[in-house]
Length: 167
Image (cartoon, rainbow, N blue to C red; front, side, top):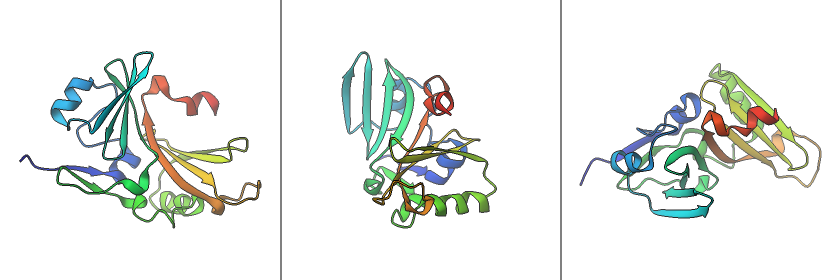
């Protein structure tokens, strides 16, 4: 058996580094140097999603354009993947207010966009481009950052980055 792959979510969130996988990489290279996918799903229009222990790799043709996870609670260590979960380790505590405190303490430059129509907020780390998605968990439509909880993280290739286009 080969050595497990270590994925440091702090390094991913702050620096955009996800083990030995890089944005724009070819699917066959990822399957050789990372792991074979748990599942590979054809989404039509030359798009596919490969699933790796709850982490989704989105491909346009054979090019990786997004790393996404909206199943944060399901990120678990296995024989093949070992995670440093960092802020994802305690999801009940991970409100937008708490995330802002953590990133401020780390001197991280970020932007936040609120979308009242979708009742969410997106915090984007400027250095890495990683986006953290928060949903309003209260029944109140008011924008109260302490009521927003972390639900997803992701990184998109710059050509597919809708945050910047909609900011």
